[in-house]
Length: 270
Image (cartoon, rainbow, N blue to C red; front, top):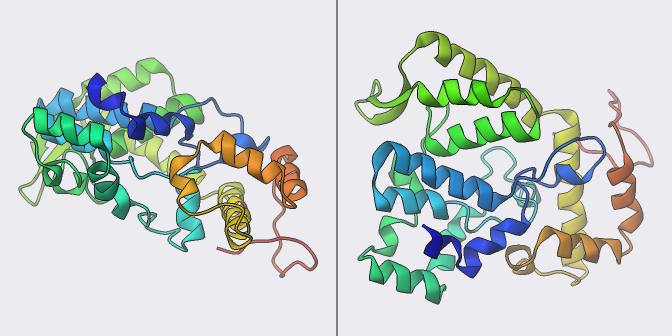
């Protein structure tokens, strides 16, 4: 996998956090875990269970079209429920990469076999089913980002998983032990609440609105979102008229809640 991992398109993901930008505010206490870390881990999980090169590469590339601040850009695109608005660029980015296309040709693999991980149920499927992508971000978020469990718990969960057939006769990652399956569901349920917390929705929409303003002011283009590191975009924000707003959010430790529409203040309602 190293040849594919070391292409510029994949390395760009090292400058994007899986936290959707929330890592930059004092409302959170998170460690750095990049979109590249996540993508490599998804690929390794798929390889562990399938030993299939095409499925593994589809997992590696599944977030290659991820922009800075990840799903925050889906908020900007008003796709905050499904959060899939940026995925359509995956094939385009792969096809425009000379390095990746040469590697695929070397390995006798067609673009359409690796550009859409949705075609492989072990790689991806709809919730509440279990896939490698969902398994990876659930375990890594629980361990690294939100500190809900330790490595031994992760090991117990991971070692209990096998490939089985679900009620639709389709291959799916499955648990051997009901008790461990229930522990995993409890873990993902806690994460599900965190993903939809007031502070999270507020933070993602605030960043999205600032980037939208910068785009309207022609300070940043939509292409920049796919070619820059988050640190580069933060530098642009810090040198714009939106610096005060962004700095207030970075220093904040909580968000206020109101039943009435607040006046003379930035607010969101999702």
